[in-house]
Structure formats: structure tokens, C-alpha cells
Image (cartoon, rainbow, N blue to C red; front, side, top):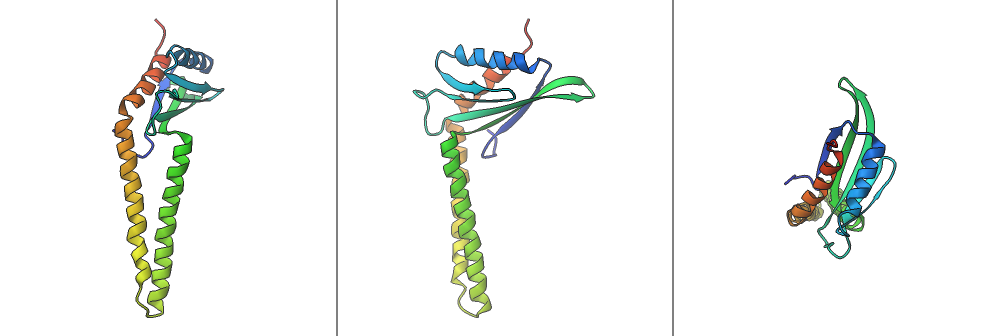
Length: 165
């Protein structure tokens, strides 16, 4: 399990972007309604279908671009796992709230300290940090719950990029 709140991966392949798009579309269709997604020119978003989706179900975002390097022309595929976009917005907002509480606690506590008052504002700093730590631990537990679904999405990509026999 990746310790980052939004695990990432990077793959390289020699297939053409058009072929990757077609393979991804076919893989989504062949999932039997288990997966849904949208495949665009250089971007794809794939997630668990609605009837199987839980709060912790992952959403995989792919970006792919052709690159030229010392090993020739290749397609670089970057994947990013995260919660459903609506849930990710909530999590990002809560992280912002934790940062705000911490910042306000530092500013109020510092102002009180400069005025020779009891710096009780500093008490908000551990509260803000606690909120951030709890959010981080919740994200790790969500990853643990979504482990099998993340592997299912990863297998879809691996199948799409493997060379045809």
C-alpha cells in the first residue's frame, strides 16, 4: 500500500495513443458493467460502476503522452488513484480547514504572546494538526478498503498496454 493520500504509478509502452484509447474503451466495455469511464485524447478516468461503488471506491485518472528519449519514441502513461471527485473535494476542503485552524492558532497565539497575555490561541495548533493526521489516517484506511478495486483498475491498464501477440 502506498503511503501517499493519492497513490501514483508510471508506465511506458511502445503502442500508439490511438491504440491505447481503443484498448481502454474495449476493456471498460468488456468489464460487464463493473467499470465505467471516459477515454479522451490524452486523458482517461475510470472508476467502479455505481452499483459496486462504495464511499472508499477508487477513481483512476490516466494521462498519456508520446515522448522521445534515448530509447526512442514511447508512450508515457501516468496513473493517479484517488477517491471519487466529490469525496476528494470534501477531503481537500477539510485539509484546508485544518491548515486554516493551525494558521489562525499560530497568529492569535503569537499576538497574545506579544501582548503578554496568556497565549491560549496556540491551543488551536494541535487541534489543526490532529485534524490533518486524522484525515491522513482515514485516507490510509480507505486505501486499505479499496485495495482490491485499485488492483482491478491497475490490471485494466496493464492489459491495455501489453503488446498484442
